[in-house]
Image (cartoon, rainbow, N blue to C red):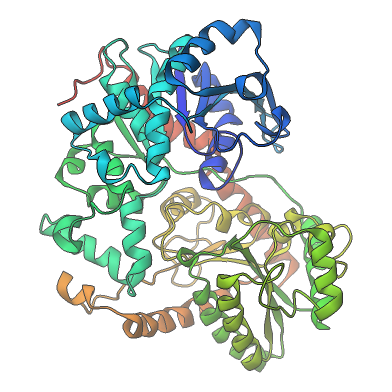
Length: 600
């Protein structure tokens, strides 16, 4: 991209990692390829709360250089930031956060700007809303009562002013909107006549499509077949599913067609974007996958980690399992956790016949990390996490619903038991005295035999691939964005196919839960309900179980081979590869233009 390139990342995860976008930023900022290409990175987001002290603003890896919110008025920034704060009636926190790749040692400290917009002056914001309506057709009056919408509208005018004060408003500045949150700032940059900003929409999902997939009883089984049949007839989301204008994220995501570049984290996301409208058909969407960890391990290290997990199962359930299964994820509908139980049901039948055993550690919660004292107390009182009780500090509403399904499975199963750990932080401190004292989060990724990730909606899916570099068998859905990247990365790592597997590696399984060709048109696909999906899922679950049982290593030599091959595949999916092969070409293309395209 050349020197002088400035990438400005607009996101709600500016101050710390909350979810997938935070993982992407960490990957980029600790990638040598990215740091070689980008001279300056600036991350901008809203300041969510003024509670706490200056030490809380940017976390343990951050350094605050200026904060009017906390009375830290550094002389070097006071004049410029003070004028912005006075004009827009906002507060500004400015500093740096440090990002480190523990495998490579690469680190960087990009600039971070947090803007308190709670009391922002309405004048500049309303002026922007008027321009967004007249130029892009966005009707802000429909959504401005929603803080998730209004907050990012208020952020935009002040954010551009801060860029100018930092000397970061140039014709080599790319304003990157991570999801809908950054779109008001990106569109404001397009409208700014004083600077030839470039703009990019980084699609970590398509919010409109996520809502449809999650809410329709047919989920992905229905949806992805519908959009493929619709594409053949030049039909789009409004034609098939009706107007989506009631959803505040939709007009912002749809307005991404005005950006200079659109980056999609996987092929399904690109497909979903094209389903938004005909303008996206010719937009030239660039698939920019997420990267995954690629640290090398040894057979001895993997065996040691698996041994800790086996000991944990022995402590909890009284047996030492032959196989360790895991699923580390958020407890949300999109993760399709019920599919894991379907697959495990088939595996249980086969292992019972073979007199073998397994345990499934499901590490998932929908709330914040619980206090260690509460965990120890629940463990002592009623054997948490083997047993659970409704209500805080144990089961939340969604967790209670899922635990019911776990209880039903465990009551029927003979050789596979599920342990539902509704707590993040895989260590004795966070998970109780029955966990081995030296257990760490890396142990579940390194020691597991199979990691599940059979989502109904998964724009990419970094988490299901974390055990790949450690020789784990990764099971994910065909609708996950990582599927295409994994197949691409596996080419050349193994030369002979395994069974009927077209991608020729035993390190991952792609589970296809989309309809199997018996539905002729969109109308019949739209009628897929719970019963039809259950039938299809049960059939696919049996096939996935058979593949797992076939591919699980049966000796140390096979395990060693999976470790070596998994590491080679993961290396081909590193952030350096993502930047050099996918992100760089997309950015280079728009930076090579003499002038930004005019808004039509």
